[in-house]
Image (cartoon, rainbow, N blue to C red):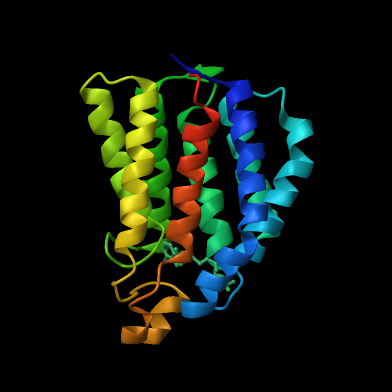
Length: 211
Ligand SMILES: Nc1ncnc2c1ncn2[C@@H]1O[C@H](COP(=O)(O)OP(=O)(O)OP(=O)(O)O)[C@@H](O)[C@H]1O
Ligand SMILES: [Mg+2]
């Protein structure tokens, strides 16, 4: 009942594909409340990740995740790049040295990632950002871990919680990032960063189906 290094590599590669096939969708979401670049930013970042992955595959899971974060930081500017980079670097630091991990480790890693995003971007729950997907996902993972649920159940619950958080961004007025420039007009649209974050956790469920 654990996620191995190979599982992590599969997850990262699968997410790069998800981003590639949802590039237009994410761009459309960002066109409504931002500057229509979230899909392109993420796709450029994860293409760079794919290029760097072969040089880092022999590292432990933490090392691989930190390398993903560094690749994103080098290729994606603006707000989204450093924030996504932080997710991978902080989660990687939390899992550093491990060749496999379980539900409790994953809950801690995603919590470290979320704290990193909050420290960097200063967003709170309800500000209509990726934090609205991350916080409920972390809560679901911690609860599942405390209840002694299986890794698979914990992953499923975290993806569901992230999806709920993503959908809950629709009526919100943005208080952080470019979308906040729109004020009340940002309401009625789903946040692109919360959407790509849900996809990240949903891909984990799909790829780690057998763990
Ligand atoms: N301060 C913040 N804290 C957390 N998440 C944020 C913050 N600002 C923006 N975001 C997230 O980033 C997403 C936008 O990412 P995107 O890749 O489009 O970057 P961007 O803000 O357009 O960058 P740029 O300024 O370079 O255009 C938003 O949908 C939101 O989820
Ligand atoms: Mg944008």
